[in-house]
Length: 307
Image 1 (cartoon, one colour):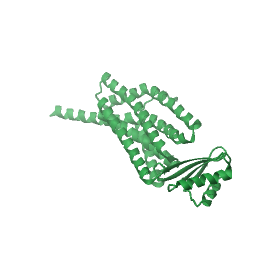
Image 2 (cartoon, one colour):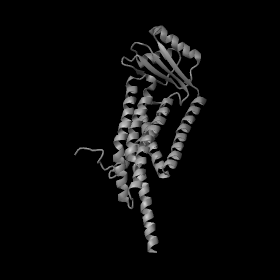
Image 3 (cartoon, helix red, strand yellow):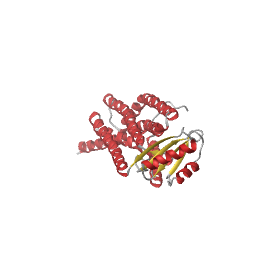
Image 4 (cartoon, one colour):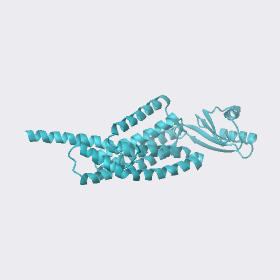
């Protein structure tokens, strides 16, 4: 039987979607607790060096050069089609003299084409960056809650935020599982995901609100039908909007520079989860909450009439 997005019963399958999302969150929590995040120098004090040599070399070559200079890098990752590039991370900030000695040593061995880019963050700055990143996400979430509450109602706002947390945590878990470095561009990607995800969610919420004015909702079955129709009416638009940005993020990941790869990857994963949560999670959370209030009010009205 073929899948038709305009006739599929999304509401009927909501327990399946909730279970799937629950499994994703639990697995993510376990992985995060066991392995943690691969934090970059933006959130840990130290120095990161991106070394472009222009000819093939190995991790052992880099470590040998560093050892000869009396330096012990925490990690060395080679990259590029021919392993011509390396990302070297040190747990402590390097001095200007140490950086200059590294540049001189690699230039003498591999030639003048060697290019070294470094990023150094001391402990105070790294703590400040981590704190500001959390503030940015918290302020964005608070602003969304206030706007959606005023524009719609508080149930929509809370459902939307829960869906956003679902998306953000899914991306964090993805980066933890595959040990991808988390840096400041990653935070920018999370905030971008929040914007796109809430945009899709609000489109569905707006259609639900419009349909509430058109249809009489007296029981849970009526509410389920209304939400299902609203999703069916907006899913193609939501898919087309997100898939356009997905293509752009994919192009950035494939053809963009090394500095924006993690940003584009986080954006790509987050957009996919954001589309999923906008359709299958946010409106379904609102449905469960609104449905319980509807049943409760009907029960209270029946008791009042009986008395």
